[in-house]
Length: 379
Image (cartoon, rainbow, N blue to C red; front, side, top):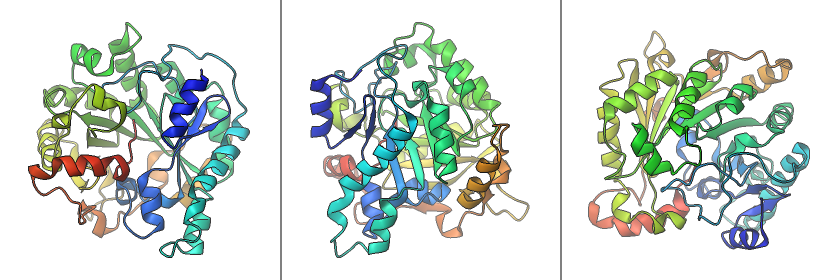
C-alpha cells in the first residue's frame, strides 16, 4: 500500500507515517489553540479542545479520487484492503508519539504554557479523517476499543463506499458520512469512484447511518460552480440518513486539488451560508444554529438537540462518554442523548471571527493561501 516514493512525498508534506498504512499530521488548529490564537469549528460546535485532537488515519488508500481532495493521484486507490495489517495498539501508541515529535518545537514557545504543551502531547480526541478511508482497516474495532479504554473520543469520517464496514463498526463519539453531490451523475464526476455501484453504496450507507445510535453527521463540501445545486435533492439524501448534524463546508483550494479545480471553485463564507439556507428550506426538522467563519462552515442541527427552554445541547460531555463507552463492553450501543451537554451561548450563531475573516471577494487569493494552514481539512 505504501511505496517509497509515496512515503517521501507525504513526509515532505509534514505527514508522519506510522507502520505500513497509517499516518498523522496535526492541523493548524491544534497549534493555534496551543498558542491561544483560536480554535477549530469542532470546538465551537461540539466542545472538542483543538490542541488535544490527534488527526490521523488508519489507511492511506481510498476507493474514490475526489476532485476536491488535497491528495495527489499518486496515493493508492483500491476497492479492498491490500498488504500487511498493523497492530492497533502499535498504531495508537506510535501515532501519539508522532504527534509529540511534531509538536516538540512548541515546548519552548513563549505563547504555549507547559500545561498546554503536555496536553497536546496526550490527545483526548482522535479524528479519523486525515487521508484515505480509515474505515477499511480490518482491525478498526480493536483500535476504537483501545481509544475507549484510554478515555479518547473518536470522530470517524467515511465516504459511504463501504456500507458493510459501517454496519460492522463499533460505536464512535460522532460518525460522519460525506455526501458530495445531490445526484448520481454528479457524484460520479465529483468523487470519481472505483466502484461501479457507487450510488447504491452511498444510499445503503445513508440507511445504515439512520439506524446507528452514535451522534451522526452528514458533511457536504461545497465546490462553487459544480455541486452547489439542487438543494432539494441534498435535503432528500439528508432526510434518508437522518443525521443529528449537517456540516456544510467550503472546498479549500490547496494541495493536489489545485490540479483539478481553481480558486474560483472556493466559495466565500457568505456563499456557504446562502447555500445552507437553501437546503434548510427543505429540512423542517433542522435549524441553522451555528457557523464558523474562518473554517467557512455552517451547522444545521436537528431540533431534537434543542430543549424546552430553547437551549441547544450540541456539545459532547466527554467525561460521560468515557464512562459510558467503558461500560458498554459488549457494544450494545449508547443513545445519542446520553452524552450531550449544553452548548455555551457564546458559541451559538457566528464564531471564528478574526483578523483574517472573509470580508470581500478581492481577498480571495490571500485567503486561499492562508487556508492551507488555517483550515482543518477533513475529507
